[in-house]
Image 1 (cartoon, one colour):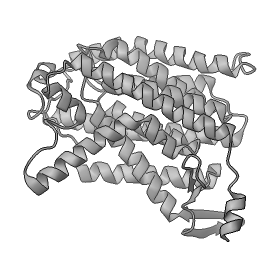
Image 2 (cartoon, rainbow, N blue to C red):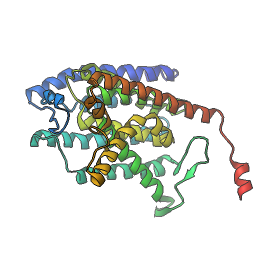
Image 3 (cartoon, rainbow, N blue to C red):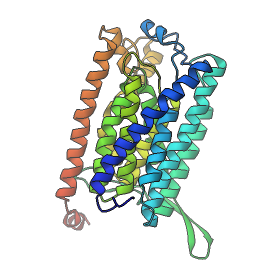
Image 4 (cartoon, rainbow, N blue to C red):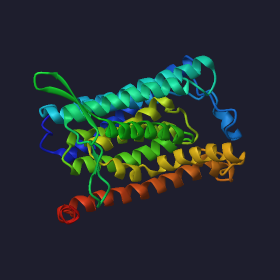
Length: 363
């Protein structure tokens, strides 16, 4: 783009800056519109009492994040390689469609004036459709292999149960059922996990920003510049968003942002074949989701609680930590996990292990 195509590293940093600048330009305008329309966040009545003062704070900041990412990838994305262009299109589509779902959910909360939006079943149906469509398109159009790579272990083949449907001529539709189920769990799980993480000022934006830096580095090292540009754009958009979302927040990203960012993270993991490593990089999201599952499951069994409050960040709030302390420490943990994840990826790519002799001996 504009003579910069020979400098891919510069393009990645340009994507960060451009997305950050667009976000910072859009958000003041969007916040003003939301205030005029009196569209604000609905706070859980059963959440921390100190959060009740946030009632009415402008929400749906994810709209600005998504627009900034879209503008950036349209300006910087490369389209001369069909497969790589398709990868970018699929990631962008999954992100935007999930963002639209989150937007509908946010608008439902505003209309109903309560913290609950769409019914869980309705939300799950649409997330399922998005994740399954993304997986099938990735496998059939981009050529993503239906296996999962665990670092330093043989690839785990999830394509053993595959249905091939002729579409006429040489065209076929391959449905690797196990891999489709895996991608569904990954995308839906991470989308909801980021959504659960979005409970404190700057928490979701900061943790996603850190995780996406590593995903950009992984995509860049695997020679997938379009995906690196997308991850860099998300990073920059999160930086711009944090300027307004830092404590005390002037705007929240809402489900529009959190669901979309989670879907983007999962989609990048699939396209770079780092699904397992991504669970390490985004480990803080996994822990937040697990804390809710443990709390709910244990309470149903014993009518007692494991944590003072779930998700986990609220537990530390109830234990006396300030909101800022929780956020900064979660950022630090995310940075540590992201470094571990990238180290695993780098070590594996630098010294790949040949499992052929082992398979031969076993067979």
